[in-house]
Amino acid sequence: SIRDMQSLESLDLSKNMLYGEIPQSLSDLSSLSFLNLSYNNLMGRIPLGTQLGTLYDQNHHLYDGNDGLCGPPLPKSCYKSDASEQGHLMRSKQGFDIGPFSIGVAMGFMAGLWIVFYALLFMKTWRVAYFCLLDKVYDEVCVIAVFGWARLTGRTDARLLMSQVAWSSIDSDESYE
Image 1 (cartoon, rainbow, N blue to C red):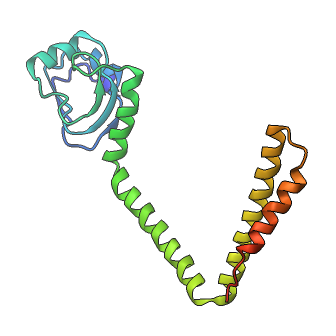
Image 2 (image 1 turned 180 degrees about the horizontal axis):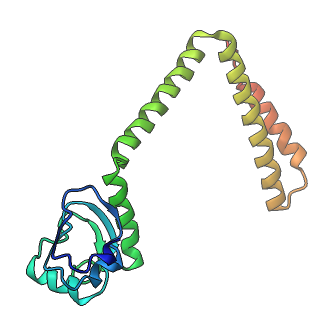
């Protein structure tokens, strides 16, 4: 492990596609005089220790390209509000971006809508069944609305209201052929 390398003086791990947190044992290496961890996918709090602080003072590009890192000596804090931002950065580094995903969902929705539209356009039995279903749903909604309104207003003549609704729907009934 890194902890056993007490005589290590220089360590360059830049551009190695490393991910995760920086181990605390790295800050215990007292002989380390050069460290470069730039351009990896490191995330989390930078371990506290005088050695890493001294190395950062010598090389300010030590943590460049690791957008998930936070805490001193970097200006980015490690509060919980930043955790969602770090998660978003990790997802975008791993190839998950919301833009193409939402475009794919929209295209799938449109394709499904067009399939249903063409099925209703060219298949008469489906079209008749679909509009009969719509009529039944409309009638149920009207019944629920009329009885609900009668209950709210305290009227007891809901049956009279229903007969008026039924006659008005019969008057406006059209053939589907």
